Length: 94
Image 1 (cartoon, rainbow, N blue to C red):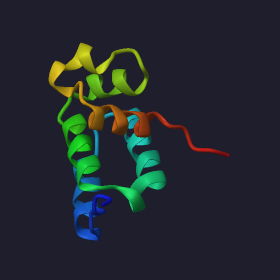
Image 2 (image 1 turned 90 degrees about the vertical axis):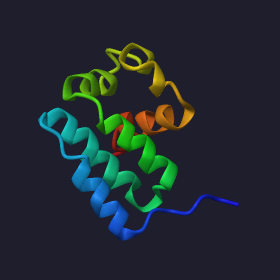
Image 3 (image 1 turned 30 degrees about the horizontal axis):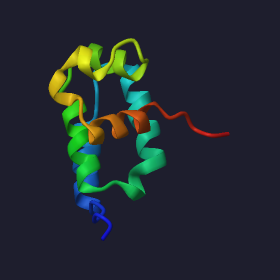
């Protein structure tokens, strides 16, 4: 059985929580929500929350591929976090 999607209220709270201090991170996050807001599950939301707990510089280094999850925090080396990070990195298609 597929996992339930997050509801509109949870999505709104998640978007608010994902606001960042670095414009570059905000651009990654904004693009993420444009593409995936309608399909986010609870697991995705939790994994994104873990990424948002990082410092702005660590998050940017992950988004740009300058660091790996293991470089930043070994506890983040999980399939759900890896999947959401890939979603954050995915460019918009033209």
